[in-house]
Image (cartoon, rainbow, N blue to C red):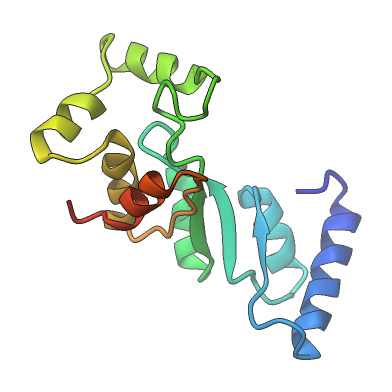
Length: 153
């Protein structure tokens, strides 16, 4: 989200114009909090179709999701795998450490994955799908892409 309210509203008006001209079907935003969305609503402009935000069991953003549901803005999850320690090749996730600390020292995802015969990533992606939240998983590895699609186990 741009930092300046005038820029945010100006950019949103530009997207509305592109949609009006038929150059795009849906328009949305990314990383907008309630105050950013409220600026759009207060300006009397159409609300975004979607808001792409970080959503996973350790970052549920309940207030934001409730506001979006009330105003017809669809959440789209990114960083759904952030709770996993190795969610990015060669990078440790601070979110995994904070989540483990909050869970008494151990994350539940490995045990759940073993119990259900799926990957830890599938556990997290399925959580979002069960919350009726579209997810945007990404991988360059064919096997992970297959796993990301096969969320029923």
